[in-house]
Length: 573
Image (cartoon, rainbow, N blue to C red; front, side):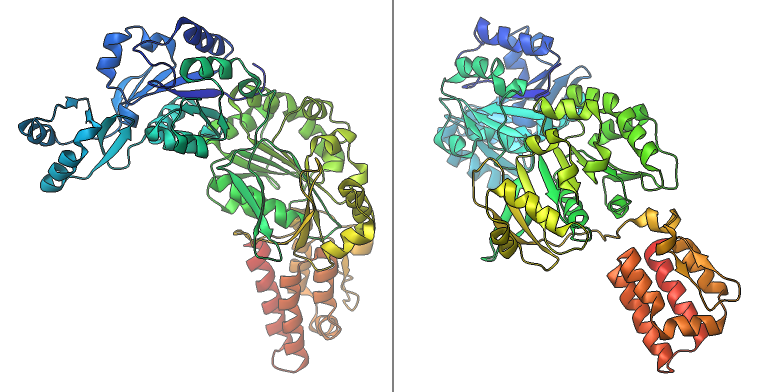
């Protein structure tokens, strides 16, 4: 099946049809989509038995039916009530007041002109119920039951995310249906309030509009529309307004010098996406994002553990629409490239069928996507949901540059700052000096550039993220630093040398007191942590301990213990 949405949820009365049965052409359009592998779910306020009475073959036409405004589900597992029935005494009380009611498996239905009588009896009986209007009809449902909650249950059973689903409706009771799905569509005859909330309003009414939608470019993925209900916050501009980007249907490139906060910002976007129930795959070249796995819904793999085979990685993403950080930091460049290449056909095939993962993030994309034919072809084909970060944007494959409509430039940092500014200024179509002034030099600042020319560049202060961020986590713990970057315990008789943080921690425990005192007095330890590991927080802790030793408030052994404990707390657990 081609890329696009994997499921369509559609209302019945006023949307598919104005009679008891949809027109043959509408049913033909539904059948065409199901034959292409897409799922179509009927979501209706009708009582299931009444629907079957006028449309006996209804269950043959859809993959699932959510009836009674979200309270009843009929699918391959049979019929299931999704809530306890409304107290039957309410129907009896209303009958005594000559209010005609129809009893479903869960809901009560009547004419909307009787709403005051219904409210009075609910109050008298002290029931926990809600009234839902559907034009001239009124439904009484248990609290919390909506078309959206019923659809969520149906999609879960079908193994499809709501973020891979389009919803179509026409009336008041369709608001939550449209809100829970990635895109909400209102037919041409929809009530005005629904039209105002919808992502798209169709020109044609009811079934004619639905048939046109199903056969059109939106469902197939040839046309992309950013959703109104789903957005990611990058930070606040100087007027304290939120700077946002769409949570889907776009590609984003994040560039900045080394140590400018790119990984921090990527982590913030991933956190938000997971909170919104998107499935995310992060290919983490340097071990920057391992701490994300501490958050609910995100699994960390790799690092010191063997990487999962491609098929297992796909299975893990499909399970509960999960998110995964793949830590590649302990692998050499060739092994990283081979793994990214090996997972491409499996992940891309699953994405075409299920939509999962919704987002793919490539850390240091100039390395991970170099000569990656499968991924590049997908980007060139117009696929969306890619996030790429790089401190060398000039080395990125051209397809990445063309495919990323949004560019985020981070301020500060060291290596590559001028090159990044030159690249971003060209993308923004403005002088480099102008962009540099807008961006500033302090870490925590960034600029959003819309490469389509839809808006001028916007500077902002990066929003704080929830999870901690430790740069190059596994690389510095278990990797092997180049000789010039290693820590040499020069005063030690044993000639101890630390090629990574684990060795540094171990050597601190055995280094002689005289050698340790000399290094502490010169602040060698904190300087190495700051300059090489680029961990300002840990460096500051060790710097304070060095000062305490120098002033006599700590003994050398106390300093040794304090330094090792600080490293253990942040890195070694």
